[in-house]
Image 1 (cartoon, helix red, strand yellow):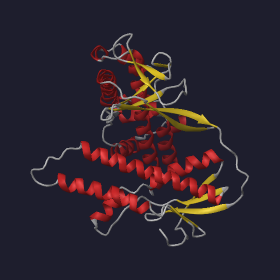
Image 2 (cartoon, rainbow, N blue to C red):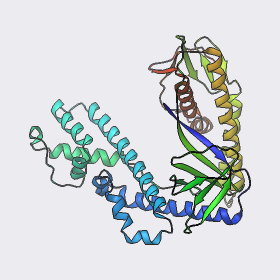
Image 3 (cartoon, rainbow, N blue to C red):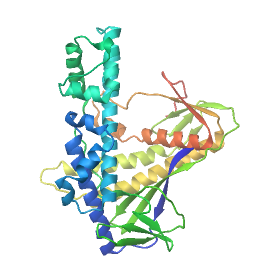
Image 4 (cartoon, rainbow, N blue to C red):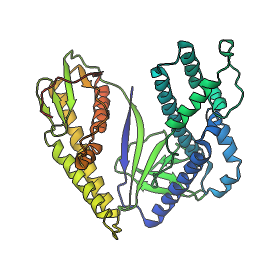
Length: 381
């Protein structure tokens, strides 16, 4: 089973009154998430993050709950979503510190074993970061002050900036109590008790899981994202091909076959647009608006993503592979001082291409292997 995102759209424009109700939910939802980030994303709250429902119960009985104009179902979802992001941040920090520990030339195996053990135990890590006593197994009952200080320094270096909820027009909705399908549409709960907003949909599909609502007030519309599990289709092909991702031609196989030859043109349009907007913004005394720019950028990104998916499908249908090998390349970077090239590389959609390629291969039962080293594919990208 592979998780896939299915989307639903409104069949008719949403009235200003209903859109205002949904925007209120999104704003309050964002308010709860930012409160969680500000209060529990630091080292002092690390132990609470991994204690189940401790933070949820603490917040629901806190004075902050009285300032949030949302039903409890939305508040709980916002708390869980924010805690999930905090846990993901701590996972990335611990992985980075563990890599530094493994590469340290002066640490003995016993010291590395101790540091790895602490990094895997959130409660012990929280106690060390907060300079509290830690009860460790007998094999570690020694003076570890130097290693603890090293661990604190590494965590401080690896900690990113504080999290913040940037999505102003989105929120999650639970099934049953949050929404229900009826009359070829969906009824969504709002901040007003016993008042739901009805949105007619373009299809008759019905789902019973947590969904994501993305509001589009500029066009009086919504986009509903539903995660579904799809069965994979096993392939009988044993053909192995190598694929590399390029800037001009999107995909080039080891046999020299090119797919997505116009990818560079679509990519260049996005680069020119963002670079022009940055140039206007940097002019003294200019305060350009963002509304038209964001709409044009969104339109170009949608065109680019549609072209990417079409090229991937064409490649898979034509080649019919059983195994695809992709070179694992380092992060895109340029060291020649060319600002234009650096800006273009930052907007390169190769991460999106890899994600879509892996998802489509999973759906078709195709194995994807990442290989290390310099690729030997034809120089056509």
